[in-house]
Image (cartoon, rainbow, N blue to C red; front, side, top):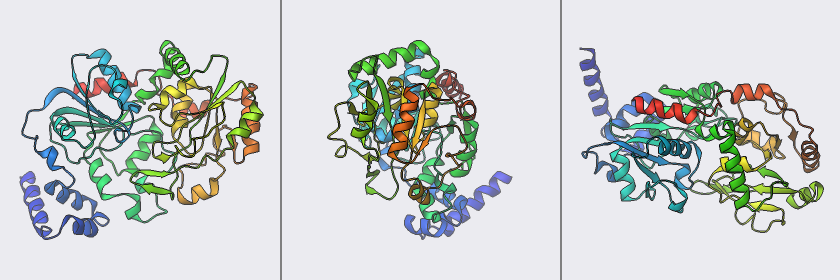
Length: 416
């Protein structure tokens, strides 16, 4: 009886707003009444592509997994490492990758589709399992679909609804909100992130606090050494060299187009290398949303632009020291228990635009630099063996890192 009443009530609500266009509906309801907006958006299937709907009546392949990472720009992240574990355990399943790069870099024999193509929507509709770390070009999937959102890091920067310093329309787009309502479950690397995901995404669905599959390698010594040697060989770096990975995040306020932003190197690489000597190599990896190619076109001999490199985990295995800023890469890196330091010359300006969840300058014992001379000094200290590992940081963010996160995810998905 209660279900019947709810159905009738929903129909009445939907009827009341049928005269409004999707844009008008968003303006009228999205900020004021999220639940009502979602009910009507679902009834209209807002954001569900017609190319996807064409195949909804066809049967679902219960053994088909559909993967995408970083808007199909890269073969990387948690989707990659779940896929590779699946390939090891279930080679007879059907696998699809949305990937716009060279398909030869993906092991196994998956079907590789271009993001947004007809085949993309067809196989997405037919797949039982969808796995992504950002967003698909579709909302509201068929009821037989299980959609795992793996996300892509432990948050330092405030996300979406937690960004109370900006207007609500800027905190959360209606498009992302609807996409996140389609998640069957959300992967979390630690308890800290679980709490934030609930508030930042207004997400009340299933959260899998399993750790990140991308970090499993740091707990499997043979695999780690194999990846480390492979990447160093590909980059032509000998074992006796010390490798620094510089991996800054993208910056708000320097938007170019779509999901791309200006890149500022911030470090005088040539001078840093002069201070550190000939035994040091610096790898520079711009964020996949940063337009870094022009800036990094001319680098000193001991510096290598690895922004084109799909997988950050591989680079972390190859490196000995990490320099970063506000990037979530630090939480993944710390699983390796290798030295890291912050370099944040634009701290005040950055925090004015993008508040953070905790005072990362003072809370943990991690070297913190705001100018080039301090950076050079701290890197020298680390190279000379003067570095203290912060057990509290590790316990807060990396305690689930035991090499079995991918297995836990797969066991959960197949149990559904």
